[in-house]
Image (cartoon, rainbow, N blue to C red):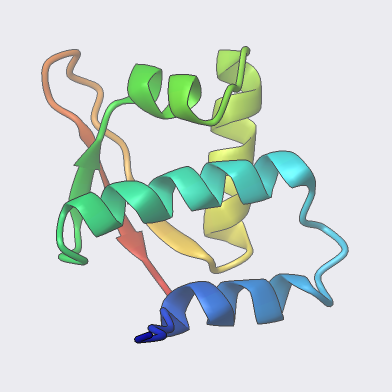
Length: 96
């Protein structure tokens, strides 16, 4: 049996263990972004759609989504470049 570790995900969970600012909704959002990064073969930046991300992490409110995304940026977990065009996705870089 081959065991594979994903150091970026391990680093994130090690960091949040002592970060009292992080709530379960932040973790859900980060894990969804991580999966989308995985689907993009770990190439950054990658494009995201707010509606898809919200659906995947079961986040119901746009305000909560944007607040938590801003938190992850402010806390240094991701880099985010918003797109204000409805047909063009925003860009995300995973910092860990």
